[in-house]
Image 1 (spheres, rainbow, N blue to C red):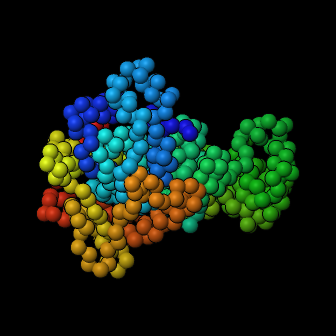
Image 2: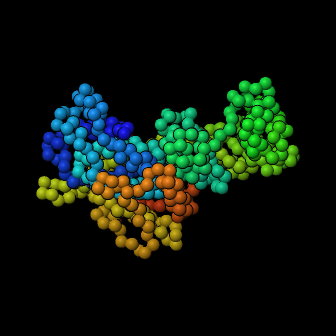
Image 3: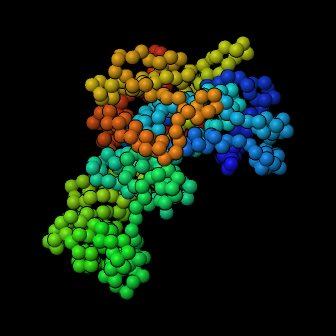
Length: 448
């Protein structure tokens, strides 16, 4: 077992130590993971990383090596080390299904356990869902503007190696067709794709020789990179080498829209009417939208998708919203700090639909909102009594991808706008509480 227990912050363990001393560590508690707001201009967010979190939870154990390290660095005292040695999460977790749409105030994950058991999961959950949801939210916007033209994730070289695998998974959940990352293919079943870079062309004595080597190896259905030297000559060389059955040409620089039109005309003139055009080069949702009128068949996206297209974190927080008092009664608690207000109480949420189109996110406190007969419940069981109750491997990734497709299809047309604006549907708390825009902060600050 590769323990995930140290993928956390120092203060999670010192809180446990202090709570053990005060006697409050074993109080029943409810934690909630949510986002107070969406990144500027976003109309909705996409939940991703849930499956990775659940896999990591199964390995969240303090073994001999982890305990020895904590002892050597004097992170916590001996009684706390003894408690950690026996740590097993035994509580319940409910959450939005991976791939689900979320809005400001959505109770994306609800953790019910003792305080000590639940607080230890804060950093683990936030690090995975904040990163993956940021990538998935950006990817969803790109897929939405791309329409029926597939997007390929190819940003592994633009982020850390572990983040690259997670980003490929998240982008796939949000609708990307494939990734260049082989580990994402092995671990999560994400389809992988790729052919050659400029270095392959530069390796050979001339472009034709490079194309010939690639076609001899990969077949005429491959994609040839035609802009190492001169694009027009590159297209001519590509068709002469591969024939009119050439699978695709890739353009990676310059005026992509203008070149796409010119390349399409040239390919058709040469008889390669079925040859596809793939464009790459620092694409984001705005660049993809600008290429909608061009004869482009697919998009390769790197830096912008793996970094959340300008928003590398989803801004989610993990807060205690209810806890047991000295008399064993559960009481709602909430943070009241300026710009960091939270709403107390264990939440239930539904998506209100009007003729199949989402019109609101309704969040009940203590009980589910009363249904009008056309509501879709959003919280599903993920962990019961410490046991994960949903699939977490490649099968789960495919299920999340399909769930996202259906959830996004429910959104109103305003969800597809790239301009600045409010979330595409409002979040309403059902308990005569202030609306989320009033109750939740608006300042984008680090939250602890």
